[in-house]
Image (tube, rainbow, N blue to C red; front, side):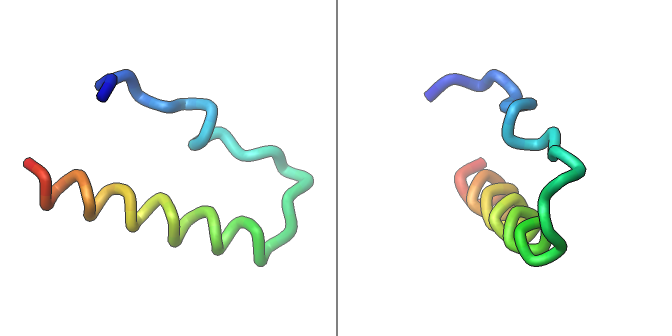
Length: 39
């Protein structure tokens, strides 16, 4: 697994709807928790 920060996924187009943003944030939080568990 590469350790490169995935900026593409973090930078959000402003055109996204609120629901999509919330879903994105929830997924991002899940990713962070997974990484913390793996450390």
